[in-house]
Image (tube, rainbow, N blue to C red):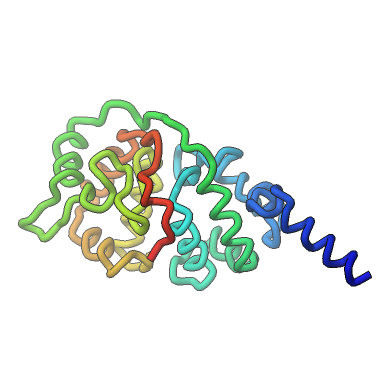
Length: 220
């Protein structure tokens, strides 16, 4: 009987559906079916194009950290907080791995940026504003939004609404899980108009075809 139990356990570990985190993504795992990841993030991790971010191909280590921060309350969110808390640590790791390995779709965002986005957000994103102590977004997230290093995720093609919401949360110190408080300092020096324009600009960048090789490393 002991041998039979061990065999079943080993089979479960080898089951791709369970081992890759797909089960959690499709069924919600311990969080329940109503909270299944696909409900908001889509079957292919593509998001909803409005307020929910795409996940397919994001760095595994980055997503693991976000799940841990949701669970601990370091990153507050009324939807993701309860879900992350309900999942076991292994399930949070598995579902992060699952989404990291999904193919990143090559899509364009919201089309040609508006004049405001081109002049204001384009300069802020690519060059920053040294006079206000603002580093460029590109210095961490890449000139095309492809991400730079394991802790700085690709953001090209993320919905404008999502980017704007995150900047606003950082600005109000309601999101506090960025490396060395960099996003807190930057966001608090941005005007509401600039936050809106940057969201549009990031969405218009579209999605890079493939993540940099180093992006799949564990997040520091």
